[in-house]
Image (cartoon, rainbow, N blue to C red; front, side):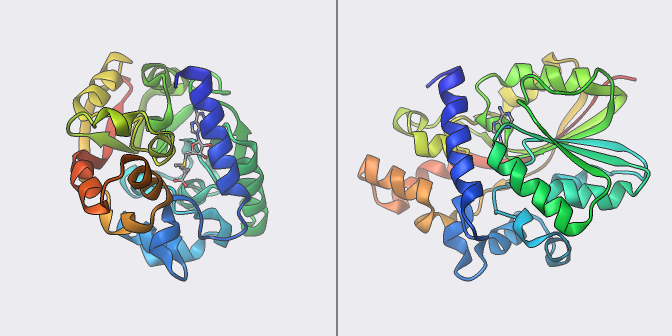
Length: 275
Ligand SMILES: C[S@@+](CC[C@H](N)C(=O)[O-])C[C@H]1O[C@@H](n2cnc3c(N)ncnc32)[C@H](O)[C@@H]1O
C-alpha cells in the first residue's frame, strides 16, 4: 500500500472505530472487559483522575502514551494536536493552557471530528477547536502555535518527513514538539509489514527509532530526545482485533506474534524549533 491507498484505508478504519457507540472499540477493545479503553489508557500513562475528567466519549483507547503529561504546557499557550481522534489529549491540554490559551485538533477522519466536537460541546470546552485536515498539509498558518503534541498517529503516515516539516513550519520559533508514537527497535517481518490490520493497529507503518529521530532532525528541529520509552502492553494483545487478524493470516500462535512484536516500542520524543 502506498500514499493515497494508505490514507483511504486509515480513514475508513478509524471512521468505523469512531462510529461505534461505546468506549470499547478499536485496539483497546480486548483489554477492557467492562471499560477497556480506560484500562489500556492507565497502562500507557494516564491517571484515573485525568480519564475521569474528560467527556466519556473522548477516550477510545487509541493512544500509545500521554504526551500532555510530558509537554510542560503553560497557561496561555496555543497547542496543536496532530491526529486528535475523539479529542482526549486536546481536552487535557485545554485545562493546562487555560482560558487564555487555545487547543487545535487536526484529524483527517470526519467521523472522528464529529465525535470530538460532540465531546467538546458536552464538556463545555470554549478553548478547543477541531479542524478537518491532513498532518502532511496542516490547515494552519506559519509560526502560529507554541506546542505540538501527537499520540500514536505519525506511524500511520506514509510521508513522515513531510509531517515533521509541516510541524516545523507551523511552530513559532522556540516552539516545542512532544509526540508519543510507536517505533521499532528492528525491522518487522515482511508478512507483518504488509498486513493492513497491522497497519491500522499502528505497527506496520512504524519507523525504526533511529530513522524517526533522524527525520525530526532533518526537518530542522534541535534537542531531539527520546524522553520515555517502553514496550506496548502486550498482555492486551491476545484479544486485539489487529493481532487476531494477524494470527489468522500468519497461522501463528499468539505467543509467537508477541515474540515478534518485542521489537515494537512506544516512545515519547521531544524536540525544539530553534528560536
Ligand atoms: C490511533 S488514532 C489516535 C487518536 C488520538 N490521537 C488518540 O490518542 O486518541 C489515529 C488518528 O489519526 C488520524 N490520522 C491518521 N493519519 C492521519 C493523517 N495523515 N492526517 C490526519 N489525521 C490522521 C486518524 O483519523 C485517527 O483519528
